[in-house]
Amino acid sequence: MRVLILNGSPKKVSDTMQLTNAFLEGLNEVGDNEVEIIHVIEKKIKPCLGCFGCWRNGDGKCVMQDDQNEILEKYQQADLIIWSFPLYCFGIPSHLKAVLDRMIPLVRMKMEERDGVVYHTQLADFERMKHVVICGAGFPQSDRNFEGVSVTCDKCFSNCTKIFVPETPLMNVPEWKDLADRKRGFFREAGREYYRKGRLALETMEKLEELMIPNEEYLEIVNRQ
Ligand SMILES: Cc1cc2nc3c(=O)[nH]c(=O)nc-3n(C[C@H](O)[C@H](O)[C@H](O)COP(=O)(O)O)c2cc1C
Image 1 (cartoon, rainbow, N blue to C red):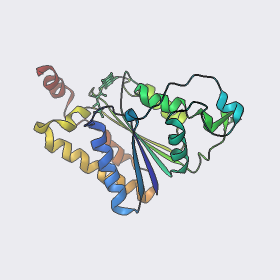
Image 2 (tube, rainbow, N blue to C red):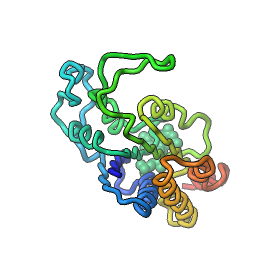
Image 3 (cartoon, protein in one colour):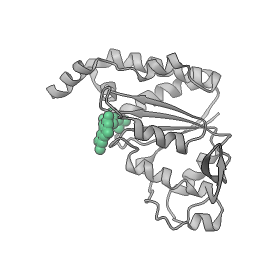
Image 4 (tube, protein in one colour):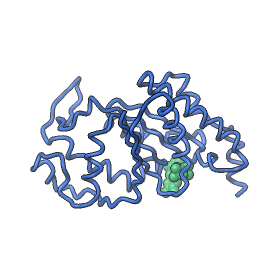
């Protein structure tokens, strides 16, 4: 598989990438993959200007001259795109959101209705592509924390497996290494499963998304700082 990882954490040592790297290890244990990781924060990606120049040209490219067109090309060549990012204000971090907004050259203005839902018609072959979203977050179990980002993923990504992980700052605390290793182990196993089956079983998802420590204990640790 050609795997493209879009790392949306701006940090040198990302909590979320610990999980994504473990997932990738699993994928690579069973498959012969060609992998590219793009650290989005290092790219020059301006916000979308809403000019619709891409739709007028209809060539699948953005009219702005920065790093986005290179990402659009790699994105279309990939079989699997992994969106790895921390949850920011219940959504996608702005620098990665700019990449997503500027994917509109890959659809056309023309709309169509399928099963009662209106979509833009596609320029890229989205049916062929698979998406995995790995989103880390600082809150423990928290009401509606991932709700917004979940809708965005459903609407924007074809064939999407969404993995929402609470308490990810624990992935980089030496004191909690055992718990982090256990979580990494689940992600490695999930990578293997995903390569073989193209999806993850409910039991697997539960392990990936479960709290590493109970709410109360987590709050106590955070509030000790
Ligand atoms: C600007 C900002 C906004 C954040 N918003 C949320 C949020 O809405 N919900 C949440 O659970 N965590 C939030 N967090 C915490 C991060 O998601 C968390 O620290 C995550 O582990 C960072 O992952 P990374 O190391 O991969 O960047 C926020 C952090 C920052 C810096």
